[in-house]
Image (cartoon, rainbow over all chains, first blue to last red; front, side, top):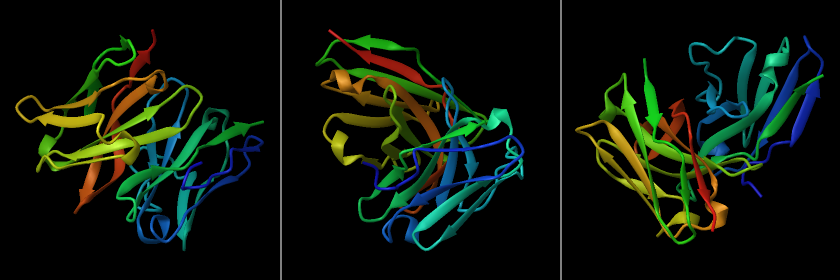
Length: 110
Length: 122
């Protein structure tokens, strides 16, 4: 059971929009930056969003991040079949003195 | 460009130790931290700990405390992760990643190694 809670799966049709939520607490999301990672099978995770809402160079602007209180959200618009992957939120927990990942959300593009 | 290249896969017996290396290039090694993350079959990402390359300070996940050691060799820009007293449930792909150090914490893992498969089996 992860400290950060994500839905196990989300799905939407090509071209549509989807959001992935990540719920935590004041000791983690509430007081620290949130990152989002894309994980394709057999490959290393890729940083998609950092510091809540910033995109590294190479991340398409179809991907967005936001944070409010103790929750964060990843948004993906204009869904493509290549977006099918597992998505993980990550942050630091000040009480545990540890980095955390959410349990991961599997995105299916129908 | 930033690259992290890990050592090859390992097969170990229960009770043995494994040491995985992660060679960095394309950036100033001491300006970032290195974190280690693993993914067991069918499971999510598990953070194992991190090392501040500049200071050598480490922080390990509580569940691995006492079994894991993270070190670096700044003469070769290489990070190492050693896991001892291996158990079958340590079977996983192990990743190193570069992270931004903010005081005593590490965030934003922006470059990752390719992963090292460690299999623990009798």
